[in-house]
Image (cartoon, rainbow over all chains, first blue to last red; front, top):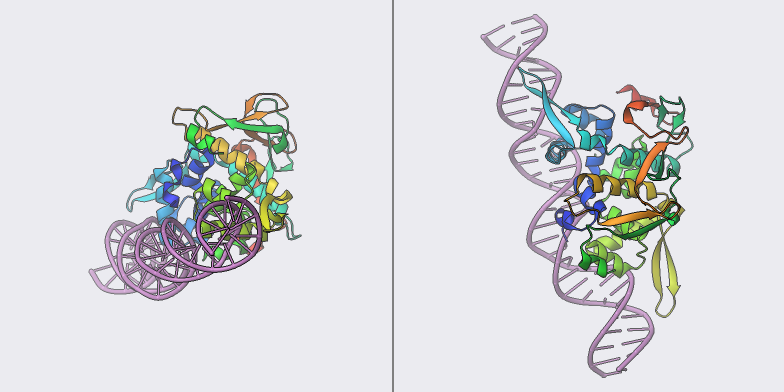
Length: 157
Length: 157
DNA sequence: GATGTGAGTTGCGAAATGAAACCATCTCTG
DNA sequence: CAGAGATGGTTTCATTTCGCAACTCACATC
């Protein structure tokens, strides 16, 4: 199966990855969360080739994760900003940071620290159950087919 | 810059993505969390080409995210299981599921549902501040250079 | 001996990537 | 006004990776 057909799978993760699963795409989004908005800055800060940055930004705009809007005329210049859908990727980014910090610590500490203004502490994202607020443990979570599951693909398992 | 050099960046996300940022890698991990353990099942359930599955499983083993262990002799057969480091990717997977469910809903509902045994409800992962337990809002989080930041790359910003 | 199964490996055409050069607009400087 | 930056891409082309099918190998079963 080609990667480009992956979004046909009956799977939330496959469909999510069809939009943000690309290597450089994630780094572009990292930059977007750090308030990078201009083409040249994306190129410089991610280290990706210009043509790839152009292609991925376009795909993110098509997916309505970024929005391309003019910020000046003469010459017309555009900036790329996160949409609501894009901002909603925040938990994904934070959980990646958390994992990276925990398992790739070379002893020098975290490259960046996140401070929660509400409580003033250096923090990380902790996933909890949306219903009861308990900290999430994989063993405490049961997976079952939901209403959107294609029955044939579930039967296979 | 080539993708293979990406892990040299001073960034938790770049380093995390150098190990799990590949398209198929994430789908293999999805399967691992659903208790898929054998080569043939990974191939069948992800739809990836056999050589890619072989390559990615090997890389995951090298990264100590999966562990390859014999489960029988004559013929020797192996299974791939999540390590502690691999299981710790659970928040990443759950946040991807959450995002996919929210933004790719075609009206038929979620493909899979997660039930929290503790409270019995269909739930999703909700990220909160590790220090105060408040729900996380990007605007409430300040980012600053940590002890592990390469000063030259931060000065650039 | 023939056939089957599981787990890969190999070969090869097609597609994606990466680096550098090129282009188009507009502004600023002398 | 000519020429030299900024800025934001697009094009070109050699290299790398993908994706698919076929092949191998070790054992088991009929």
